[in-house]
Image (tube, rainbow, N blue to C red; front, side):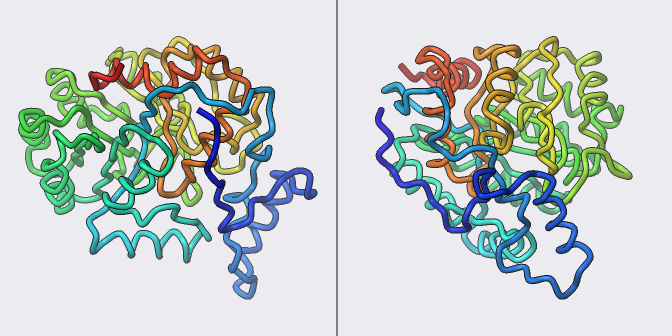
Length: 336
């Protein structure tokens, strides 16, 4: 599959050959945080810094002619999506590369040859849980969309909600320790994990920090220490750790590597945000048969990620594993 799409540059990327370094971008970010008069028109520089341009790398620039499954995308009901785009755009200068709606996901995936997109909801309070799950339950048999469900710890009977959603055909559950305010080793979360495991659901965790929050906070923790604690209690092989096991906001070092962890990791937000050599080292030492292609769309450009993946230096077989084989096995998608 030859790269025929155009990589979006709505907000111009910042590259080393322009004199940018992570340290310089972080210093500029500090101005945004502490100088009320600092212009915000270009967003936070660290959000836009990339270690390489999309076509840099030792790869051929050609992807295999195979299905593509993006296991990490976000969407909202049509009425709410503009608020999410405005929040990320106004606060962080983040570009939304599709409207953040299901129709937007469908249109963009068809443009780029993506076969299926997994939609990950992140309700942050009990009221939002049925809003997301009831909306997405109508798409469990959709040919383009694979919806996940979610719960929050303090809602009424999250275990019953997991069993209900499993009966409706949901294949997995997204949990976000930061936005949902829990530690992965919190015993109050154990019944939630146990119910999902009983239903053979995939459990996909956000891991690490983000552009607007640290990895460890007053009432949350998704650090490698917490991941260890989770796996010591629940060595569940249908677990997915988003962001290669730990997204970091300063981009000065890659996530910690723990090949001993069971389950899978996805690539969301990481391709380009970490150096190509670090990416290759992590996915190969963890095992490319346990790496899932994910973007974090709409906040990352799918065209950019696919272009980088084609050039980064993976073999044809490794690309097929990451682009679809692993997701096909994990989610039983029936792809050839």
